[in-house]
Image 1 (tube, helix red, strand yellow):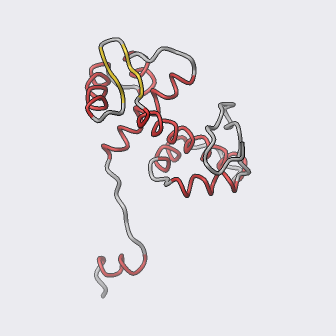
Image 2 (tube, helix red, strand yellow; image 1 turned 180 degrees about the vertical axis):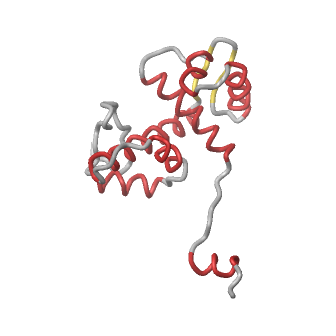
Length: 153
């Protein structure tokens, strides 16, 4: 009988992403989304969107500030260029996956599944998906899909 380890290495490599990095990405995505709607990014708006407590948001904003992903001072949250890049990428991944599910696969959009996949998409995959879907400009919810390198101007 083969051991699981040897069998696993022959068939496929199992990858377990860190929940911490996904947590960071969710906050950056939320901040990007609130800003996209033209609203002021506040602790309360982030807490409401992510369904977490305001003290949890403050704690994460401090961490994101230390990681140079946001500039956070009491009453002010601004994405740094790197934070903006990550938030935009998460939004792009989400919206392309929604188009894939609704328009290409003809299945109901499963937000839980989208959230599980979006964090593991590399740029090469996202660009290939965008190209496969013919560079959609809007997601099924009517939001703009940020353009990628694969999109023509």
